[in-house]
Length: 300
Image (cartoon, rainbow, N blue to C red):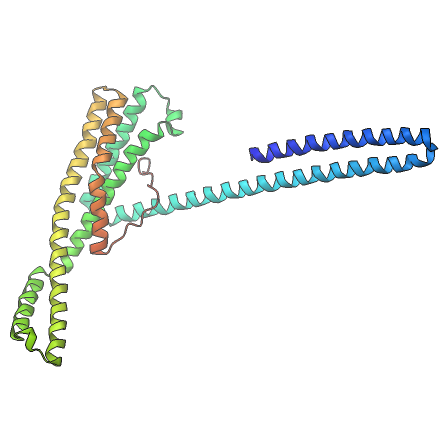
């Protein structure tokens, strides 16, 4: 937009120079015509003056058109970006609501308690800086608020992931898979030495080998999910305690920098938890499909 304005100013200056030049030449031609040829040629000088005015007018119209087009394009782009951002925020907010609603009553209660703690923590940080309620609502300390809100979002994702793991456990029969593995291994052993296979036996061996490989992969996935289930449960406890600890720091009137530093440290430490969630998405089949982080602090 600034470039458009500078460009228009430049064209206006050029147009003014053209106009001045046109008038100067016209008056000079007109004076010369009167002296040498009389008044008959003064009309040609006037015509030359009109031509310079027309050129200047065209330049002004062109600059106005370019400026208007540039401003319109920027306005369209800003509206499109804002509309997309607003749409993404609404999608993320609805996704968070659906995730929360799918949790058990106990997990919903734990999330609600942690959200209350986060709101108190946010209020304490506000009070330490002596900020007014109106400035607080308007969104001051966006970095601080964003950090607290991100921790709350990670906590919700961990709860949801644990719920999906529980659903996964209910659909898998580990004992049945282990028995199927043993049975398949016995059937492969009955086929004898692979070097003696005929065409039919070779086909059966390939199929049984693939069955065994798939069953072993299922057991491997189960063990990995089980380990991650334990990790997520521990991570939920740790995250809850860390945020509570930051709140206690605020109650004891420690500095806002101390609280922010604690929040940043927790945010950095949950990287492994987020990676675990991504791994589970690939194995179990659920997807959070997250865009931007939804604002959870101020929801009722």
